[in-house]
Image (cartoon, rainbow, N blue to C red; front, side, top):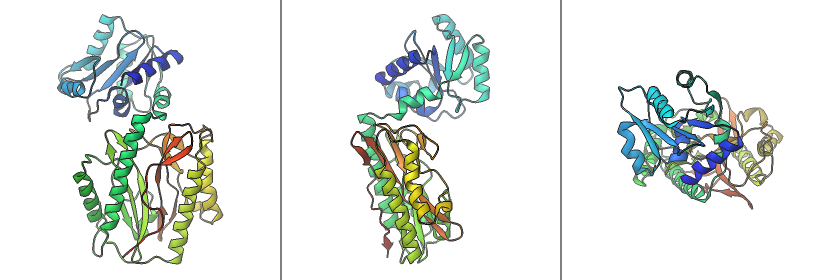
Length: 365
């Protein structure tokens, strides 16, 4: 993790910011390799250009941080102690009171910002989110390997779920079966709540599985991802149970081709908006434009949704080392929908598609 901390400190110099106070667990994990669910407790990394970075965490988590590989200084606290006053005293004692501090404005609560302002009345606060985004946007070889393995496990999860489809089974039963199979493979957590939708429910991009039973003629949509050593995958496939109508086949083909076009457009230097345009243009030509109701994709890494946002108004260029999803969809209210999603890692030679499960419409007997 030292190279990430070194890069962070170099970025601080370039941004003319004295220090940064990292509070989201995704970013804390990125620079420390330590992850926990802090609940209401403060976990943070303080870094400046004067000394080694400081990890702030509950005393009961100290050994976990050491086991995770953290070798720098730690400021630990017990539940009965005021961590903010401890931090203030630490800064004063070490002569590290910063003139300016970058914070994660999209994560930090108003209450915590007010506490920082109270203990650091002469410090100017700015938004350090973009600085951290720059660091995480470009993945290295180790991150690529973790993302690839997460994608392999996602493929396995979809395959297991599709094979579990049978008469009388509910959406929730299939969720349980595929997640159990993933647990047997060593998966400790999913990237997000697994989605299995069937019939007209597939028209809801963020629908919730329930006790609805799979019926012949249903489209069945799977959207899932796993966390592998801190890195996420995210895959969507849509299949048909017993039979598919000509309209269902046509919609599925339209979405699949839109995915292929957007994937082919993924080249370093291409404006991100062009990826959305490639998929959306094909869906619009097929007459379903109004039924494609979301951006074409999102960044992927420690977070299942991170930068870049693959939307029609993002003019930023794609860069080698970015990882993101492409997930076009068509959703017909009251009828049903189709979404197909792949995970993409951008190389100097173009897109490396990490997810591999077949994209053609399968009829499950």
